[in-house]
Length: 363
Image (cartoon, rainbow, N blue to C red; front, side, top):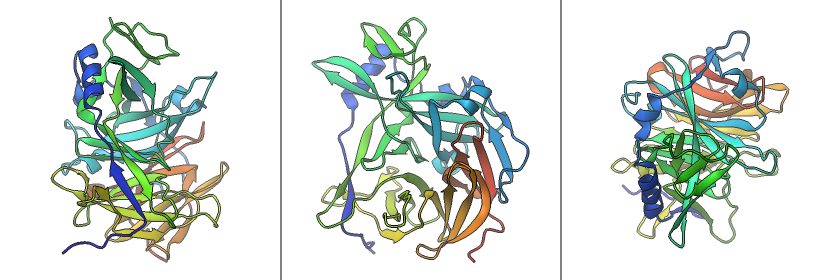
């Protein structure tokens, strides 16, 4: 039976950056993929103790530099449980966290993604880049998006891009900057002859394509502030939602069905991907996940007050106060542990937290 499609908003997939990625691969010696990154994690996180919210079961934190930096701000979270039915990638249980950069000294480094091994809390940052060909010459640009949400779905990463829709990467395209080619400046990104500058990052992940947000006349444009995956629905669905600071702004939740053959969005004959649901959430939502038809949304309360969890059905979400640390962002569900993962953004109060679902009821 054909599913109902909500009119007014939809996504259109752009062409793939096939030639651009091939040119980058030729320069760097070809892609290395996610296994190479997971085998080369270079930073050490740790458990964090103390009070992190009424509903938090476990908290992790970054190394000293990442806990304190004001140049980069963590936003989105997904997991290997989203990516694979086995909940593992290369035998590891992995978190993926997106960050956006502030402009510092006239330089905007764009966005990055971090892969974190839950077995030993080692992790590594990977720079997200936009490859272009101009008159046959390869160029690299930073991906300037807020990266407020991410979904790791099969071989793909989908990164939220607010009014633009979302940006899609293929993890098979991950590339390593060889020592003999990485002679560029730490404050630069680009290609100069056979040298590649990548702000000092060892690995880069180029944009494969985008899902461009389109709005029909007379409808409010949907902001793709955050993303998550509902694996429990048939078919699975990519969940998107809007952050709204004020109550008079739209704060909607949307579901886009996923084609399980390709792990991309279902697309109609007109080339559009349309949501099957478009419902009302709550103001200040930073992320939302769906489990067995119940929605779980993280809600921020400014830079000094603990965050909340809103639980229930769209239009009837009820808040669990003091549930989360200050500054909660995106949220992802891990089925086998029946728990959620979320991240917080503020310097010196920057955690990755696990939240057991038990006890989170609609009130």
